[in-house]
Amino acid sequence: MTAQLLQGQRALVTGGNSGIGEAIVQALADAGAAVVVNFLSGEEDAKRIAAGIEANGGRAVPVQADVSKPDDCKRLFDAADKQLGGIDIVVANAGIQRDAAFTEMSLEQWREVIDVNLTGQFLCAQNAVRRFRKQGLDQHRSAALGKVIFTSSVHQVIPWAGHANYAAAKGGLKLLMESMAQELASEKIRVNAIAPGAIKTDINRDAWESKGAREDLLQLIPYGRVGEPEDVANVAVWLASDQSDYVVGTTVFVDGGMRLYPAFREGG
Ligand code: NAD
Image 1 (cartoon, protein in one colour):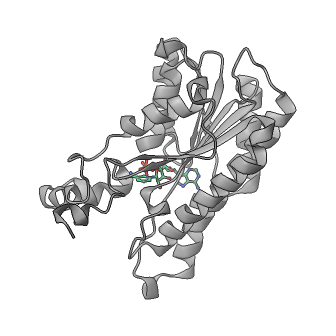
Image 2 (image 1 turned 45 degrees about the horizontal axis):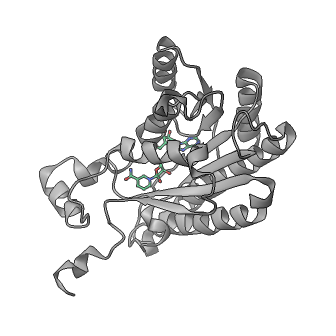
């Protein structure tokens, strides 16, 4: 049943060559979608992922692009048009961290994170919506004209000392997502976000790889385990599918309860 959920749909995942993006690419392909696997660097990984999908009878195309650059974004969507014949699902997932104490944070660190995590997501979403409109609705593919899914973070609501640039970008993303959803819903374009908590990927390896760091991290997670990329990918498939057709402008937290003020478990 799940294998048919996204049959005939075309998807694009930014930062699709590692971590959460890679798991989303795989899950969308398993659900029947053809997928553009965007990468910035790490071409070998993107090629390996795409080849694995194609070997299983799916369709996947690796495309290099820097999502913070308008021309690259346009080229990325042109590639989706050319290679997959259009686009139905966009997962704006690429993101980085450049951590520093507030007074030590350089303008470059600030700008880099805003450019990729907020402006990059804006550029991808804008390209996506323009293409959805041009294509028009095909109800044989999906009840929606198109779906945009942002990979946000629990830090769209949880302040994060030492990561002001990252929290500012994700907080901005929350209202970008909600404003877009409000503006575009009448056209049957669904815009939603996934807010992961701590998921085991390269971006936060320091926080989960050693036993000591992992124990500290688990104090923040009521459900008692660090998340896996697949925990996020399963939600992305659902948000991309018609099963969530009435879900508009929502953030789905995939965080084992991290945003529930776990320090108050003992009564505060
Ligand atoms: P990751 O480092 O494995 O993946 C990030 C991806 O983004 C990489 O593929 C990287 O190449 C790509 N990327 C970076 N800059 C880019 C650019 N300019 N253009 C195109 N691609 C670019 O880490 P991840 O954990 O898989 O992160 C994916 C998303 O999930 C990010 O938006 C991150 O903020 C978010 N997130 C992760 C966690 C977590 O615990 N891992 C928690 C909350 C949110």
